[in-house]
Image (cartoon, rainbow, N blue to C red; front, side):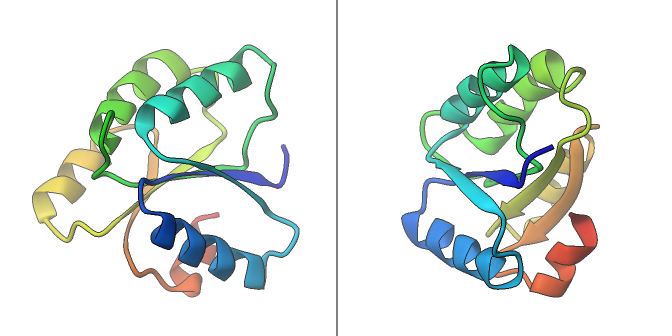
Length: 127
């Protein structure tokens, strides 16, 4: 397993904040930032077929254009999760809606549901 992690989020500001926070406590972690779920699926298909290195964990936003987090989860769960089961997938969203949390937690692949802004202590618990 590498020290790479995958962050799938359409907000450049959120990506910057998350990456800086993680770098402060985990300077050897390397972010791979993608702007929508479709790019995340493509990347993870490459991981599955061995052409890209497997990330240590995934941070997934729910609200994105092109392919949102729930659409990503549907494809990931069916096509990729069986082969990539050891990658922790953490929902990192601004959604405080209980219905979103309940829906996300129904996916076997979801390790945690964290609301932005998150605390590093909460993050450390899940990785």
